[in-house]
Length: 629
Image 1 (spheres, rainbow, N blue to C red):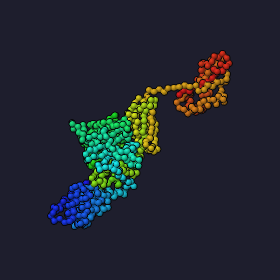
Image 2 (cartoon, rainbow, N blue to C red):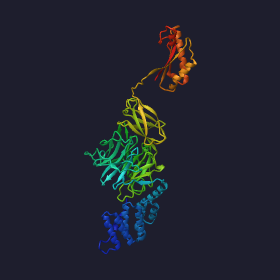
Image 3 (tube, one colour):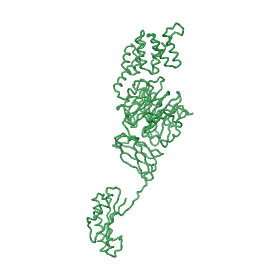
Image 4 (cartoon, helix red, strand yellow):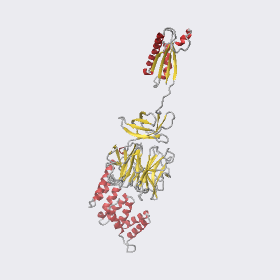
């Protein structure tokens, strides 16, 4: 952004004698510089402008022309030095060039130099106050900055065209971006990692989702099944159903399948106003986006729509903590589902538009936004950011150092104080435990240790999978449900990230499921006539037979006592009951729950053999131990 003073300097630079009217050598060199600039040969123009200044160190027009060219091409430090030299060497130079030097120095993030040259001018107005405020903020952000570094991605990602709105798939294997080709058409591109830690050449994603219209500013769900994006130049005939820029949605059943033909969200979210730059929460329940619809705070505002009861609800403005009379754009909600990054020219900054972050306190209350500082922000424009789940790495777009004003994609590390909480992705599958088919309409609800609901994830209908985002090192309660299935509950905990993502399986039983039972005769204990006490040898047999079942939960033990037919039926029932109870008591001592043991004396019923000989009578005096599972 330039001030009125730069316009005045530009007019000054044009007040040169026409060719052939007694021009000095310096004027001739500047004339050649302007000729080169008219041919869009900046290198040639700069070369002749510098020669003109060397020829005549007090030549104001050369300084003003050359300085403006450098300012427009975002070479702020070089521009500042040109204006500083002019202020020193030209007659009355401070009056003409001190303020432009201050403005260029503050854009170059040299706050002390900016304040010095500001002190050399007698002008005191809104412009000088703004420069002073920007310089002081820059000093503060320099002091507060961490050791993070910024790297520009190479030419396989950044081209002569603008690239912006970067994002990374949850597995880190796909880098998505928007590219504006020939200054007109915007399409989605994607790149995969190479074997050296870089990226292969970004390729057009093709149709769908790309079309002859402009597709831009996308967000891909963590599970790679949903694509939300902005499409422009698509006004509807009635002027109401769609606007110049609207939100669209595409879907695919698997991460390696084709995208569906995108569909508009319709009038619940889209209006005749601008709607774009979506960001989807990790549980696919909140859609943040930008709009200038009525009801905001001025310019572009950030809004959110919640998905509940199977529908996207009417959007809600994020409020004055986030939105200003300026423009708030490019929201990005992190995988912790509470940290929001965005771009703004309305909050106090150090350049055109800067990147900020805020943390959600409640659904409608946010912390005061914090400028990401230097070197992430610069004197140029930063317009979009994506923060990786680990909270340490980020990709963002900036037009710093680009003579054409084109945006490029940069990578950076985030200082700990500006980073979200590190999260772990868990690839979950909800399935029928009998058929192993995906459970219909499966979903997982997470709760904190106090029972407060934190998030709800819905399984992909294609393969029953879903991708959860969990803070590392914390324990959560979960509840898993499926249509016509019995719900499952438990706790889930991940101490740290897995190699790609953690795999978790949730089997569910059909609601009408009746567990089949199986009875097995585990052991038969025989007793001598009139003996009811257990012998040591019998105790050893019982312990050996039951060893593998000790500690098993869902088992029932039937201890059935029988006698021969000698004696009276009442006495026989009593003896069989005493023998069965003795064995039941021993089982309890081994560790079986008494509630799972059913001891019964049946007397002389159910003989194994006819009671016609002493041998057969010995066979009938017994206790049968039957186990059911």
